[in-house]
Length: 446
Ligand SMILES: Cc1cc2nc3c(=O)[nH]c(=O)nc-3n(C[C@H](O)[C@H](O)[C@H](O)COP(=O)(O)OP(=O)(O)OC[C@H]3O[C@@H](n4cnc5c(N)ncnc54)[C@H](O)[C@@H]3O)c2cc1C
Image (cartoon, rainbow, N blue to C red):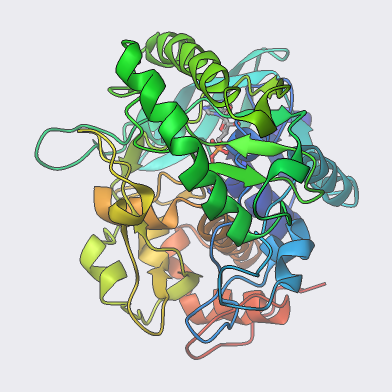
């Protein structure tokens, strides 16, 4: 007999955007949900390795293809309706506000329990189903569930369960470079040529203006930073910039010590970069307000699922009968061999500018009750370089949480028994963008 306090309908491991969206979606469908996070605070990469930019979620006609929980998280970004760059405001967010929004939405959910400082370090599997997970940290216990979701980004839960996975690009297993991000204040916008700090025009002006200072520093030093330019995104209030502009190669988050040593290298790059740009008069008194404490890791394991989404699927803007999410972001490979200018490493999606993510890519192959709700879904290196952004991952998380709740409420023994049109019905009822037929379900939608 299980201890009822440790017995949940749905157990989600990892509280980044994917895990949190999954938890909200499942809890709103009246499932008893546990969200487990190893850090002392929820939020994952988007909060603790903040990145500021809300990546593209509109098709080429300006239609939003992620309108579910993503819209609740980033309401301001949905007010920017234009599609032309220069005068338009950069859609950005403040990580503290995002964290508060997560807490506000979670607090409304009486069916949702969140445990932080808890790391899942063992998984008990019986007959192709996860039965329970063992936790260390602030709670030392074993937790039982009917459906388990991998929100760990790196596929940690799936790997512990023995699921098949892939890492890196096909030819040599190398992964995209990692980044230490930081927040900079104290600059003088009156010395900027483009005065509206929050506009794309200013972003491009800064990119062009700061590059020579950065490149000169690279020439004089032995900098390990492989970037060929400077990327700085404005905070929504225009009072700070988020620099996504360091690059550490050969990071593998699944190898102990790799992230820690990369973080130290990245921090050196932060100081070099800031020293270099302080040579520009507008940045003479600039201050590093925060170096984010989590290394920004772009990829880890990609769990093999019932279908592996490919780069070709993205670039052919493929539609799937079992679509449960969509992604409008381009294929953005931060080349492990050394970076090019950011315009060169993006492959823009052709018209209409978005593709479908099939339900099968969220189901771990060989398991009846393991769903993927973070960037570890089943896809190739190239496809992952597109859907890994927060708009894509929030939609994936929301779909996975919905599928898990339908599985539990229907008493299904396998997540494959849920049909994509039932999932779409619920997502659509909640305001999420879906395409394809929908089938009404008996599951109570609030
Ligand atoms: C440098 C960088 C720049 C980026 N730029 C952008 C951008 O501009 N715009 C954009 O939209 N996206 C951007 N992205 C991508 C995006 O931020 C991430 O891919 C996305 O946030 C990942 O969300 P996630 O939920 O999959 O994982 P994460 O947010 O990484 O969350 C995973 C969570 O799982 C937890 N965890 C792991 N293992 C365990 C365990 N065993 N037990 C318990 N908890 C565990 C981790 O602590 C973490 O909190 C960027 C990413 C990086 C790294």
